[in-house]
Length: 417
Length: 196
Image 1 (cartoon, each protein chain N blue to C red):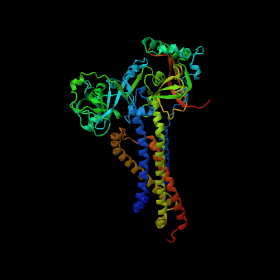
Image 2: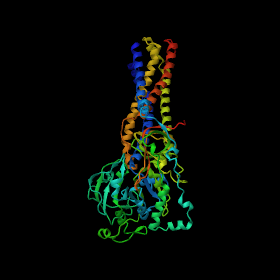
Image 3: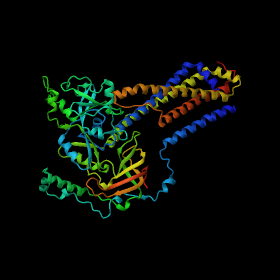
Image 4: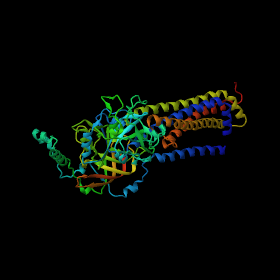
């Protein structure tokens, strides 16, 4: 029976192939949308772990979260070092990690921080950062590279790099008088850390020594040793990551910082800000999902139309089958099997296409947005979607099958074509 | 024909089995209730119950202070800073109800996420009596926050949705400078809120 259905389909392969393709495309779309949505979320959530509060200049909570941890967008202002010292003194606060952003190297962000960053910043269930080679920065002009920076630009230990002003892709104005030396390279993390160049806060000050009134001073510039001997204590940072002694005090500390008198500051709970972010993007996600579902429905309607349109042409085929001893029930079954075969092939082809897409697209997403999308087996939700499509395909097939069943009862061999 | 019928029945049965098997994975609450019942009596808690009956919330010291005194306190000297800290601590004093310690309780609450694991679920979060509205009034005192930890990761769809949190509560009175009194909850289960 399946053999007959298969041969019959082969006989009409162009239309069958188109029907399969339509289903395959819809399956690919819906799976890919679902996958990117889920992995983007988990990629974001994995980036913050173990941090109780993020502090920055007063702006929006989502914006602060995006620029401080995910390096998307820019800060509105800095936090003065006096405020940092004040916050450090609060007795509920366990540790403070300063972050200083705004410069870049070949399109990768430069992050000025202290050694505490490597001690306290954790990602994905409290995993600490680890070096794959070299050591943490020790000198003013030392830099620790994220794994991807090193891989993409082909840097090794002791290579020298020049940091550019601003965050543009091409360095038009470089801090080239004070080149940095690569002291260490971090292991891959699947977070924006991979795309950052870490230097000390003093390093950030050092490369701006010759930088006055928003432009580079003309001439040869100050040499590295003179800079080393200057007072390089930071005057401001962009954001702070804060850990508390007791997490239950988080609201009070947040309030204290939000009402800090000397400077307008904003403290956010990373988890709450993430929730806000999700509620913002969920509208777009929903829209994408609705479009995907519509495409699936279109694919199924296409399947239905292919089968229905074929019925008239296949009256003779049915008649021959009937004369060879097939009952009307067989004809019904035959068409059901046909639609099942088409749907299942469509789903398989869709899965293959989906994995191809993810395989190719993951690299782009990782490089462009630092989003880690991994190849993985279909999730429970994916299976649910696939099963729903399969059942819908079968149901769609039963309509023409019923029609064929009726025809074969009425027509017999005496039909006029 | 019987062979084919068999084939189709098999196919359909397979599909149903497959769906239900997949379904079992989607259904997070597969704990049997008998197990939970045996863990002890369940006390229904209100947020009021977490404040000792004889406790009177101290008044805001700044509300009754003369402007002169406030100005003097704000001069930034070390003395004044210490005085502010002392006043703040006195105002923040929020004792816990000791006899609740170790009880198995059920409390209606909102969840404030502290940290997510890679599956977007939480093992650690704060339970609070209200959500949002943080800007107009001071945050809840220490005895109106329950620090919850759960072995099974909890999924939260919407911060604005209340839940029933069930578990064993710990009331800790710590008289040290570093930590303060508060409640912890060892979470057994988090259920969607239904009015009872």
